[in-house]
Amino acid sequence: MIFIDTNVISETLRLQPEPRVLEWLTRHDSELAIPSIVVAEIAFAIHKLQPDRRAKRLMRGLDAWRQRLAGRIMAFNEESALIYGELMGASSKHGRAMSAQDGMIAAIARIHAGKLATRNVRDFEHAGVDIVNPWSAR
Image (cartoon, rainbow, N blue to C red):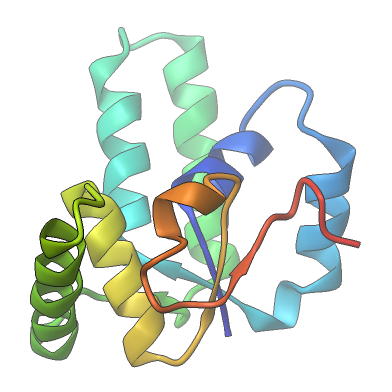
């Protein structure tokens, strides 16, 4: 299973998304999943916008992803909460700050023994998950 980070979904919602990312997503479609935290981050970003055509277009894009990966949107649950605490504690002890959202995303990927697709490789390099960058993956 390959979990998609917020920046990957966001790239697909751009008017002119990076072709390498779209190709990578198509190639790995059957393996893809989304942490529920990513849905929350994107929905929040959309709802901060003025209710206009752009916001509606972005919401349609998010809805399309939710339909495309129905049954593969993984929730932050009790098990991931425990992994989150471990991950954030270790990160703090070693002076490597990680946002709460990134910690939750990494925890969800870890409990499912999945990879994480992200452009922000440095943000997750000590999270204990295998990382793939769709912008540079072959």
